[in-house]
Image 1 (tube, rainbow, N blue to C red):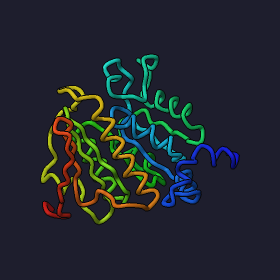
Image 2 (tube, one colour):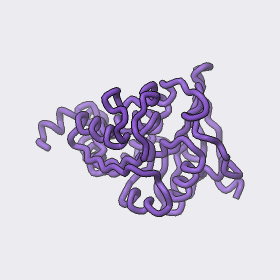
Image 3 (spheres, one colour):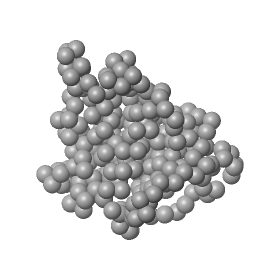
Image 4 (cartoon, one colour):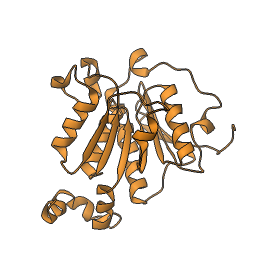
Length: 240
């Protein structure tokens, strides 16, 4: 990329002393993995790409359905029937050609996680079911990888950042909940995915840049009907 392109595209980042040219180069050299290219994964992928995170792995085995478009803003009507990961890659390529996107049209499992997470600096959990969330949590804890967890339901959502040595999902739940996928069983206000997903992205960017205070040992919840944010402290190892 030409220096003038760098300075023009990322000007608003370069103006921030917490980022500057050095921080922007860090982002361009960073690697992130997004698990799920749906409601949460859409804003996460778009804003990571816009920020110039240079390498993004996207994992999702589903195809775009018309019912997705109410909240999954990285896709459009022309993408219906196509793989979500390919739709997301095309959108990102049009948004920022600096970003290399690697797609995994599959569900994350214990066997493929090593390849998907290889050399990644941060993992963002954008899945919609308990089994996937706890699998991602356990793999990241085992491998010492920073993880940003997010979840949405109806008019609310929550975000939690997990780094080595701090609280993780198993400190929040004494046993893994057996809940069905929200998108299949109850509704969600579409914009909730955008609000929670952008908070996840802010946490991921802070991790990559090494700036600010993270949502560690705590959960941030958002209630759109009350228009309120609340933080809950979590004690690491409380249930273990």
